[in-house]
Image 1 (cartoon, rainbow, N blue to C red):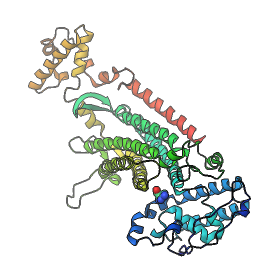
Image 2 (cartoon, rainbow, N blue to C red):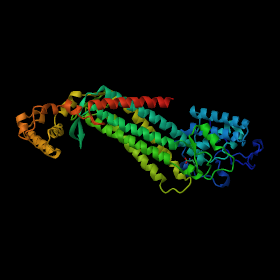
Image 3 (tube, helix red, strand yellow):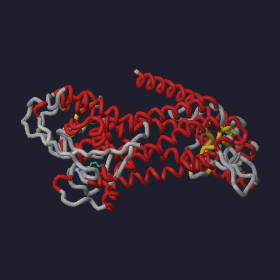
Image 4 (cartoon, helix red, strand yellow):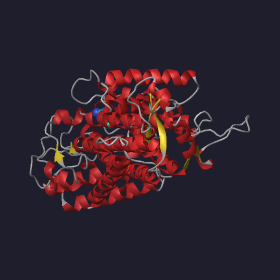
Length: 498
Ligand code: ARG
């Protein structure tokens, strides 16, 4: 393990714009170990407890690769505009490459004395590249640096999350196709309402995850803005070419207001908000899987590989994955509360409070990725108990609306038809029968217009087939929805690959 031995002290550049960078003087000062790059105006060492308290290195070290990539773009731009020489840029680049390799290889010691990843990288660069390292931070502040790092990080992570949402959507569409003729009871108020295709139920989640993916893509646009060059808050006296840095880093645009650039965390709030909605969808799905896998429903069986047992009750097989995803939703929603509360009442521009943005952000990214991954893997491992679903659809008067609709077709106004069907339900309940078990004579006591063709109307096949309005559970509609979704996913996958 190598420890950063030497610290960099305040860079002193007293030459005007456009000067030959070789002529930029070095102060020649060296910091002692334990001194900070900002220690110039301090005469006392930082209190050890304060050092520990203010340090964020345990968390933000995860940003090291982005921090280094951002620094390389910055120094390349500095050389491009002549603030440093190409030789200096090359030396800094090589040094940063070595620092990156050390961190990646776990051959790096982090210390609270160096606060955050930005100071660690800069300090280690001093070890690798010598005095020239002191030029790297020209025209830059940690305020715009950290904003850059988290935007770079989040851009990559949002793309990963969008890819995972696609994978989950594909699994759903595949399952919907596999079970396209399976019927289940549809519920409102968790009471059996009308029969629906299981595929239709699955495709409802497809729609939710599609909106999640759209929200993520939209949030990506506002994350894809390059803040570097804002410096501390007001911009810098150096002739930085921000557009050049933007191109090097592959951002869509440069931020337009330096104060906003260093104080904006909208993209993080927006991301965690979109992530919370996605988690709510997963949580609702989880709740259904938990219910459906219970003996009370017995609609599905989750494979052994995705369930766990009880340490005391030998018969137990618990849907823990679904339960944990439901539980982890609380973390993400908690993270949303944390970040929006963090930003509330912060005056412009940067405030140290904002260092607290990373934990909720990183935790959200990691939680959402893990939940999407485990779901995508678990869903194909669910066995659907078609007969139980069908049997449940045939009990509980799920065809009462269809009886009313039948009466309407025979000329009875809907409100009256509704009341007749209600009376027939009450009669059937009293005789412990379902509507389709009544005789035509019994039906006729409620309405003369009912004929033997009623039984076809009350059959599951007929009920599903007739729900032909766009978006309904009719067989043809659901097939069309599956086709549409398959085409959408193919197109979007082609789009992301292109
Ligand atoms: N560690 C800080 C953060 O994450 C970096 C910016 C610190 N800037 C400052 N002026 N202290 O927010």
